[in-house]
Length: 401
Image (cartoon, rainbow, N blue to C red; front, side):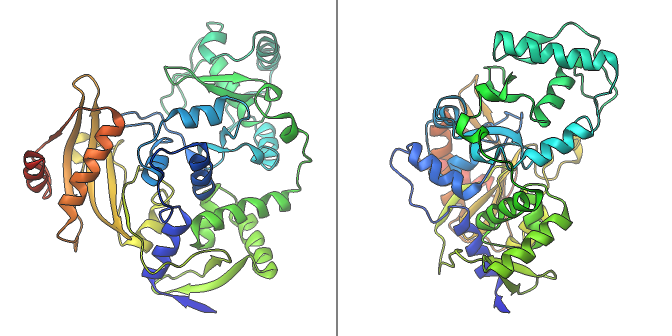
């Protein structure tokens, strides 16, 4: 069994995620496609305090780009990506639709992700009526289709109508697909045959074992080096299915067992993974970036303890509401609490904190990255609040600029 240092594993992981790719002066659809091949999926989240979550990993790797690239890839022919419950809610390559068929079948059997949808005459009638309505009218939101049914308030505080709950079930079970979103970020549902390319729909459904192999193979390629838990999490798979797929991929030579210094669990290196001598990254990472979304992996690779504090009461937050790790080289050297004040046209730096051992150039590099980010977001100024040990230096650099 080969062995790796944590630094080697970290550089391997960053290379697999696309942080060695040279950015284009003006990213194109080809740049987008290359970046998506690295990340595998793009997690979707409704929080828009800075920028929608699915746009940020592309920015972190490609630099400033036209977000219309993702909209084109998701909503125009030839569709390259489609939303599905792939990691959680996420854009995934459209060719994974047949691979997810077993997941869809499972959701159909248990009536949704959390068993929300009852099996009774009213529910079955609503299901058929919604499918017929979508077939007749085309893509529509839950609000468009809502028949004014009473809203339930007994599921995690959500206030979904029966129509919205049924549409979520139909989507996770593969009976409808997401055609796009409107300007209010509401999902537009449609029949799969009007969303998924015909050639993809015509592909045979792989067996469960084949599907697990494909998902673990993709997760391993995106991670570079990973434990079974890391690989399981990428597409939120059962541990047993992941372990069986890993064993097959090891036997076939796609994965190489390795030990990483300090890791308690065995790890696996993808056969095509690169192990660079250095990584020259400079990027702000969304809380939903694949580099940091599995918090135990983030800690193991970067010695960086990270928790998103959106759901923590304001007076109990340690670093802030929407905190982004700052990647410099191959280390996470700082974290910064950011907000886009679109009315004022300001990027608000509500807190900025250096990590232990951060290099002397951290503030200067972070300042440059904040300027680049504000330009991409179309914000004319940066306002730095006096919170965090990096704030004074950022203010000085801002004044000097």
